Length: 133
Ligand SMILES: [Zn+2]
Ligand SMILES: [Zn+2]
Image (cartoon, rainbow, N blue to C red):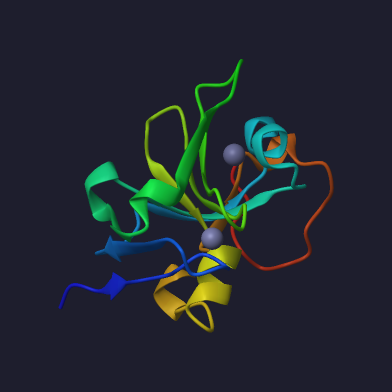
């Protein structure tokens, strides 16, 4: 069975549909995520472009192309929540925290499986997940 998820932003103007299983799910410790999103690390699910569809509120989306990174940030123009960002491979990177809030809990199959770019971290994490450089 193909899973689908339909999270909406905080104000409800934008809804997306994610289909299938993410390519990657984990905690990213790279400096690009830190720079783009102002977070110490980014807990992500990463999807192919064709796995993400905007089902409501497309007109409310605003896209910011970072001036020095090959990354974009796509937000709701009403509540300001980041719905997804893109990475250098043009994947659709959707925050686990966004999904957790919008879906009323993070489904088990979307939880983190590892830490990556862990050698670029700004602090250590004490959990049992694999830590990849
Ligand atoms: Zn919104
Ligand atoms: Zn990153």
